[in-house]
Amino acid sequence: MILYLTGSYGLEMATGANIIFFWSAATNFTPILGAFLADTFAGRFRMIGFGSILSLMVHSITYTTIIDVFHSLGMTLLWSTTTIPGARPPCYSTATNGCNSPTPFQLILLCSTLGLMSMGSGGIRSSTLAFGADQLVRTEEEGMTPSRGGLLGSFFNWYYFSVSFAVLFALTCEVYIQDHVGWQAGFGVPLFLMFLSVISFFLASSFYVKAEPKSSLFTGFAQVIVASWRNRHSKFSTQQRSERLYHVAKGSTFEKPSEKLRFLNKACLVKDPKLELTLEGAAVNPSHLCTVDQVEEFKSVLRIIPLWSTAIILGVNANQTSFRVLQANSMDRHILSSSFEIPAGSFGTFALITIVLWLVLYDRVFIPWASKVKGKPTCLDAKTRMGIGFLLSIASLVVAALVESIRRDRAIREGTLSDYPSSKMSALWLVPQICLLGLAEALCAIAQIEFFYSEFPKSMSSISSNLWGLAMSVASLVASLIMSLIDHVSKQWGQHSWVSGDVNKGHYDYYYGVLAGLSLLNYMYFLLCSRGYWQDEKVSQDTN
Image (cartoon, rainbow, N blue to C red; front, side):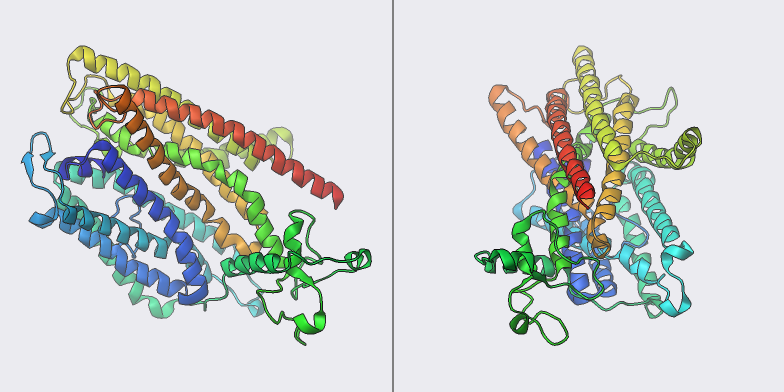
């Protein structure tokens, strides 16, 4: 995508990267909004269907999956930018990919297509896992649940397999088509696949289990905030404090709220049962009185936020793919002495391969071996995996800075300073940093998802599965801010920006060095957050 923006649209590196950052942020944030709409108003089937039709009109290489139907509208529009003459700027040099600057209309059309793709992603990614799980539900009379039958685990495995396969296809075959056939064919292939996905999804609609939407947890959180604020001035005598009555929902495992974040406990405190509760035990006004479950669910979210925020900097590092594509595009991408040249956009495949290999080795080799040695079931806990992931992320940036420094020095000695000439240095030197970052993502992402799922109440499992994506959304905005600041400051210090579109005139090594320093500070922040969280957990367990 960065090559399309800097080449066919004539945008500067910083501008094109910022567009991708904002697009990535929107794509990772819209599933949260989609989950709220699906659970509260539309339902999962309607949300996926709406997302499917919209997505078919927009094209997204990164998020094209077998069941990703909502991208359709944006895919069609993005494909149209490669075919309609006035949809993008005219090029004055096909040899150097030199193009005029885009007009406001062309930029609006481009950003609109990317925005539609993000909306499509929000409709699909927020609901596909939950909608698929709905199809596996057994009634209580049958005496079987998805977890007991192993159906749910099998579904998750095949779902992530389809996603991984789609990403692998996008980074290999799709990029190869774009490089050797053209953007028109490159965007046309996923458009055709998306069209087949939409047709197959709706043809099978009569066979789906379609759960009706229920009240959203976000509404419950808002009620907790409002009720706590309304009751903030409530005061009780010593006798009342020892005889407090809390609003406990039927079937709840909580008898009273925890002592953590006690200022929220007033949201579920019953002052006058005759006025505040119905004969069935429900709250007369939910915005004045909440259940203990609602309060504890909201507390769990607040307590997780510090640890959740540590993933943002890792997401910033993962968002630097545009720079690596430009680096690879200026290096020798041939494998050994063969004539085959790896497309610059396909180097992300090495990160994907690393993730898949690690998951297989960890689950099938490491855990069985460690369990055999210790004589009991053993695995790395979530805290350890997160910490290792952050350290590997720092290592990947250090390696990236060293490799880029060497590459730039060689380019200067070879006299290849401008217009993206290929250096004699092999692009395979980029593989170690990509693999390290892929391993860091595999460790940290899965550890955080497992941690959120285990720490949150079961009623919040859908939200917990989307928190990693929300962190990546914030990371895209932070990455855009960091790059814009570095671009502005470095231009004041010298003639060229550190993040110049010309990789040989810029200083990507300095840029990677700044990110490595921020990642080191983030690791220290993670140690403080994790120590505080687990000490709090230990105190709670000892008290209980």
